[in-house]
Image 1 (cartoon, rainbow, N blue to C red):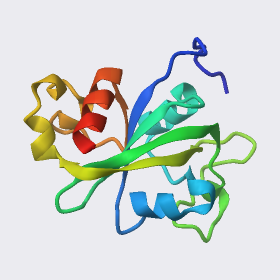
Image 2 (cartoon, rainbow, N blue to C red):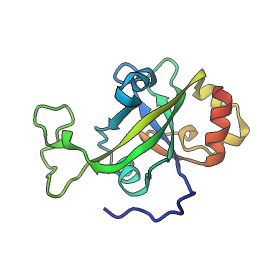
Image 3 (cartoon, rainbow, N blue to C red):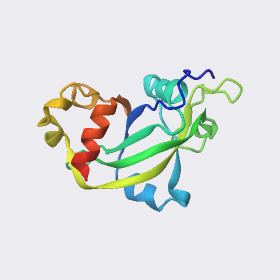
Image 4 (cartoon, helix red, strand yellow):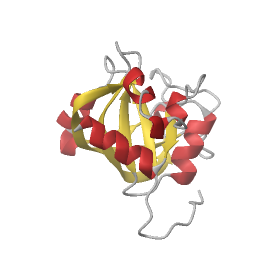
Length: 163
């Protein structure tokens, strides 16, 4: 797979959603080497972000979806770029895809590593009160993608609010 060429100093910023009952920021912090493979993405746009645009060192906002309230809870970074999501080929796995082929993979994953858990969880309601975040993809109506791009300014604002 071809990666977008980037200057070594440039980084991209992302928001990755997870359901805390399934996998939380604290689970990431407790994982071996505080690192996990982000598998099970079955949306083509989210897959494309991982496969084509995520690079080593990219920063990630971890977002707990389906929580009460849903909120940004911490940060991580990409430590392994995209590679085929093997769960698509396992007939006993919940993310099995009978149309996926190991010789021509349909689904991909990346590895992320824990960086920090926020002192303050940042709900959508809180984020909507910050004028400089008004254009953020997460805050747009109907924005449901599990992986979303974030600008550097949005990332920095959110990190400051979480500390």
